[in-house]
Structures are given as C-alpha cells and as structure tokens.
Image 1: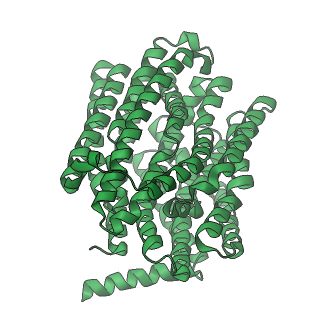
Image 2: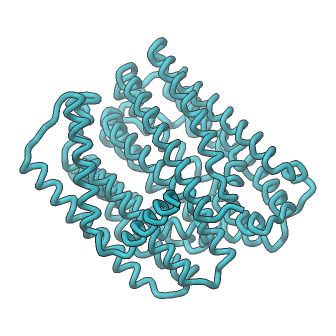
Image 3: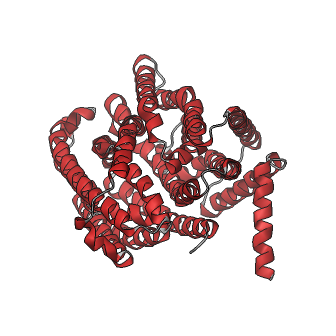
Length: 513
C-alpha cells in the first residue's frame, strides 16, 4: 500500500500538471473568444456561470459528506460498505441532476432580468439552457470521481480531466474561429463534460469491480445517520459558498452592465484558473489527512504538526501568486487584449486581496478532511448574509462600483471566516486552543499586506512599463524571482520553511543514494 506522503506527492504533482495545462488552454480559448465574440458575450458567459453556481445549491454539499464517509471503509478495505455508499451516492446524484435541470429551465425565463438592458441581448435564454446542460450532465456520473479521490488516487481523475479538457479547448477554438459560434462553443462543452464523466465511470468500475454489486448492498444505519448529520451541516456551508462566489458577477451585471462583467471576467479567468490549480493540489492531499484522522486519531500532536506545515505551504503558494499577479496583470492584460480591457489599479488591489483571503484558509481544507460539516450549519449563513449585503450596499449607495462589490467580499471574509473556520477545526478535531494558530494566521496576513505595499511602492518608484512580448515575459520572470527571494527571506526563521528545506534535503539524499 502506498504511503500517505507518496500518495500526496503523486496526486498533487498530477493535479498541478493537469491544471497548468488547463490554464494555458483556458487562456487560449479566452483569447479567441474575446476577439471573435467580444466583451458582451464574455460577460454573459461569466453571468451564466454565477447563475449555475446558485443552482448547484441543490447539491447541498452531499458530495463532501459522502467522500468523508468513504475514508474509513476504504482504509479498512470494506468492499461491501464502499459499494453500499456508492450505490446510494449514485441515486442521490441522479435525483440532484434532475432537480437542477428543472430549476434551471425555470430560471431561464428570468435571465434577462439579471442583465442591464437584458432585452437587447438576443437568444440569451437559449444560450443559458445550453450552459445549464453542460453542468447537468456531470451530476449523472461525477460520484465516481469522488471514490477515486477519497481512495488517494486523484491522479486518475487528473489524467481524465487533462485528456478531455485539451480536446474541448481545441474544438471550441475551431468553432469560434471558423464559425464565430457561441452555440458551437457551448455544445462542445456539453459533449466534453459528458464524455469525460462517462470515461471516469468506466475506469472506476474497472478499478473497483465490486461496485457492480452495489444494488444489493445496504448502507450501515450508523454510517447513514452520520451522512445525514453531515449533509445537514453542509447545507448552510453550501449556501455560504454559493452566495460568496456567485454574487459578484450578478451584482456587477445588474448595476454596472455586461461590458464591465466582461472586463472583470478576463482577470477572473486567470485568478479562477489559479484557484482551481490550488484547489486540485490541496484537495489531493486532503484525502491523506482524512486517512490520518482515521488511522491515528489519538495522535493529536502529529496531526497538529502536519497542519502547521500545511499552513505554511498554503501561505507561501497563495502569497506568491498574489504578489506576482499584482505586478504582472497590467502589462499582461495590455499585451494580451489592449489598454481598453484594463481595470484601474484600485480594482487590481481588491482582486488580489480578495484572492488571498479566499485561498489562504488552511483550516477550511482541514474541516473538509475531518468531516466537520456540522460546524458550518450557522457559520456559512452568517457569512452569506454579511457578504451579500455589504457588497450590495457598497455598490448601490456609494460610487465605488466594482471596487465596492469586491470590498464587501473582503470585509465579510475578515469578519466571519478568519476566526470561525479555525474555531470549528480546533474544537472538532484537535480539541486544543486555537489561539496559537490564530495569532500565526494574522502574522501571515499582515506580512502579506506589508509585502504588497512594498511592492506597490517599488513598482511606482521604478516606473518601468514593459511593452512587447519579450519585455513582458522578461518582466514576469524577474518579478517571480524577486517575489520568491522576498518570501524565502521573510519566512526564513519559520518552522514551516525549515520543514520545507528538510523535506527537499531528504529527497536529494534519496536520489543520490
């Protein structure tokens, strides 16, 4: 049996490589999309994505609850229990797919209302229904991905995503260039999602042949009760996640127009792609933490040490991306699309800070690993209400525009998530005070804030504006090197960085041996 460390490294490496290629593919498609269909269609695409995010409330976080339920029987090689859980998983997700389809068809009648001057956008309801179908087809097969990921084999899923995503990007570019067709773009997305999920289902059944007997198996009443308990907790968690991630484009579209949504979508595409990359990498190690929580649940110190190291990795990766993005976005957008697609520097500040606060949440990742969903039953509702009304008030009652929408999300994150996530984790899993971690969390954030301000001042002092492909690429490489050196210097005395260096040394010594 492969060790947790090796499984984490293999899964994280596969996830990182796959997401990197997918980022490049999405960037290529976005470039062609902008030049063939324009900012208005790009804005509509972003709006559809946010509306579908709201519809996914029907999933209720059931996937996370079922994934957690699989950790123990997989560790114990209890095939009957796994088969029973997966059979129930399949039935539930089939029902969810039908619910989302029905709700989406109803919502399609009201899509123009979410667009400023929506009646001037032709065929918007039809486009939305096609976008809806690309999501619905996933629910009839996606539960098989959860089994592979829970079994610390997410690299199989990564390979599947790589193959079908590359195919999707190629055909989408062909339809956009040759036919200038948004319909063709959406149809390709539907087919790729369907075929990807069909392929992962076949692969899963070959790897776990006992799943074919799932219809005869019944879920243990104790396990079923635990799943129900966790689902109740994830309902409110889902509400919070949907409102926080799904309202920005909707508020911008409603109050500021689709064109601004299109401009913001270019920045959001890059940050969302990076977020997916981080999510894939971090999720690939969550299964190992879940396994640790089952096999060594009494070894609290070992779990705390691993969490402390994970916090450092989370911080260093997110801070690096945030700092590089702040410097690199202006010349990159100018080179990629032109000056008229630029957003103000103030908006870029808010985009970067919003990204960092949304992704530097190590406690949230561990909450999912330990299955502490019940703790979110109140927290996420508070988060959702706080975020929505702050963003709405700032965009409606002030002249901040898009900055107000983003600032509302930032304030909500600080007021709610910064302390509530670790409280749930430390009370539910470690049963020790979270004060030490919380103090370290704020030291990390304040350090990032100081580095961001120093970077801003340094860029203004230098006043260098690269133009042309080679100059922009050279500038980007220089920024990456400077940021890496700055982060290594700032965190040189931390336990997390010492752990990183020790791990690198172990790998090098093994290679020499």
